[in-house]
Image (cartoon, rainbow, N blue to C red; front, side, top):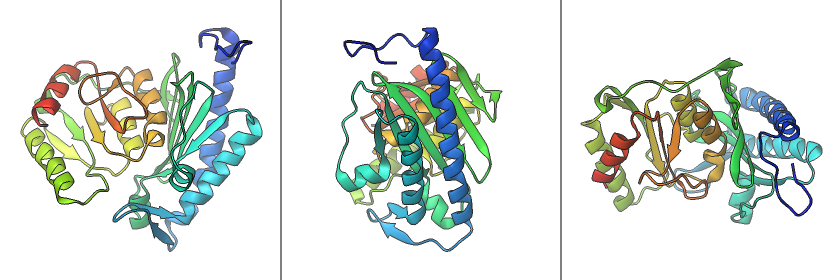
Length: 283
């Protein structure tokens, strides 16, 4: 809620809390509508374009972003919008203190193209650059993850929390190979994975940064890191949900998380120090 002079009230103020709850409801409505498009397209022939050698975009990505943006603009015409497909087309959009919706209309496009069911819509809202509302919806598995700053995290309406695992060797790690295929990048990525495999129970690559974060939030995954992902739309929704589930989101160096940095790590609080140490050793 914006006050005269351009400042924001604390999110604990009752008027703002009510507004934020409405923001969540609007985001869920948008995600559910986009989910119908994804479900319909999931079982049909896809028309695929290449943003890079292995980085894909489909008509469904674009249709979902247009739908979500239109829905949000109708409800909140003064709010800023940042989306993966618009940003890819028109260049980076600066994150300001204004209420800003950050949208990935289809996270896991490669999964979508291949009919692999780890796909989702990710919608995050920042207020004063603070991730405040998060919605991540997998319409194929019908899983809706939600979170509001200070209000907890939920999966299909039921509270969720991070795992209580305290040992790396018993932890399940998630990461991604990324979209760059030059030799130096691939070598650096696989070398780090090789070293980490000696420290954890096993590794998963689901193909969706947002769903990896939600996996941390609900305790399916104990550790997650990724560098070089597409942009803030991959993490804006999931970061809220992890924190509200009792988890930590941080830079792989252990420093504070920067939503614009394309670097993220997440875990429960018990694992952070050991995880950061091994991430740094594997650099």
